[in-house]
Length: 265
Length: 294
Image 1 (tube, rainbow over the protein chains, first blue to last red):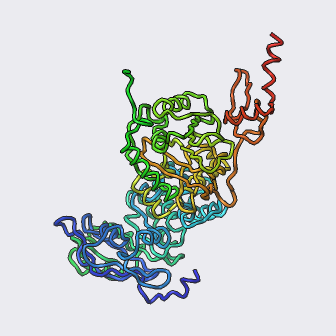
Image 2: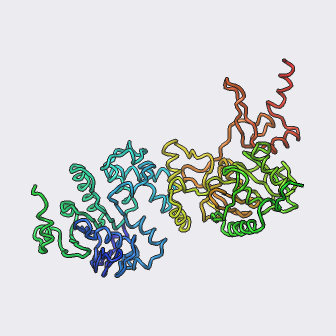
């Protein structure tokens, strides 16, 4: 963490400039620009087909943009264009300094190997070679995400949906990343499990000082987790601002519609 | 006169040329799996079609061939492959490890240390060590290319978590020349240290999977492990019942249905040489005793 202490918080961690992506004639994403600062949580909201997931894939360098670019400030403090990184560097970044929480835990976990190995995989990938230490670290993380240590040798296919999602978060955070991408992290979970997961994520993000980009269609998730909100429609960002400001006092008609379509508690 | 005439060592010259190019590339990049256009061979997959093609490509008229299956010179697979090359190439065959120039093997490395100039050809069923953890071939190739081998340790971690020790006993993954992680074919892990800094050239052929890889002579081969769970060899804690050897890899042979068993060297040539040199185990004198009782 010492290297993070002298890291300048005034400089953006991730910068998107004029991002665009087409699928044939369909413009899935048009002219998206923003900067994300260390420790900041940004929610991208919008209905299905608004380009949220495409944008997330562009930001995490899983898709190449048609236009624009994404830059990331590496641990040495240099802002670099992701498209210019080699594949080895990009993949290394992906499994050390970044996390990616999928909506479907089966995509982010190895369902057939034990929970301990799932959490330990990233450590082994960066050269950890001591079984005892890997297991201790895995246990600590399972504890932090409220999974019973007695389940450490069970495969995630024996876990419930909520446990899988928590395990996926532990697996991503074990290398102490600085930026986590989340794609509908609470999708498909029932309401009480969602609440517990959101609570956990909010604590972890606060404790670790993570920056996060959360894609969601659930405005409650955005309100609870994020500092800032971007509203997308038809591939464009139509409104952006502080979460409370956007959700309490939406300017755009579409945002007003989104906000008003939530059932009052 | 009606007997079909084969090209030397069965395969046509163009095919041998193609296989030799793959072998040369494999030697140039130790541990890297080189794709090759594997041919149909007159034997089923799983019987050593990869090894046979490699042997056919490197065999010359002056070579002396030895074929072993699980260490033994006299099992069906070993005999049929030996006869196959005796017939199609007319090369001399032997069971002696020292006299052979080319040794085709399934599942064992001979006990006698190999010398320079010899070639050991392995029959490989599944060349990809990451296969059972990452089923996508496109992904495993990328992982090899970028030397991302964290996943290999996941397998060893799982072993320890489940059994308390690294329970992988054969096809134990190795790192060749500090670069590529390689599956040493299903040899017992007892044989892994023999691959390190070996004087002989080691070639691996996988016929069904269409891959050839190699370890050039005097190359470092390290078995993967954890600092707190180091690699260990495994052998039954007994001397060979026939030759008394206490340092060879043993087969367990069940002798009756009342729990009787004996342990004998899996390498038959090594065992016979020792018996010829006057070494005896507990069993080698026994048959005479039994005869006396009857």
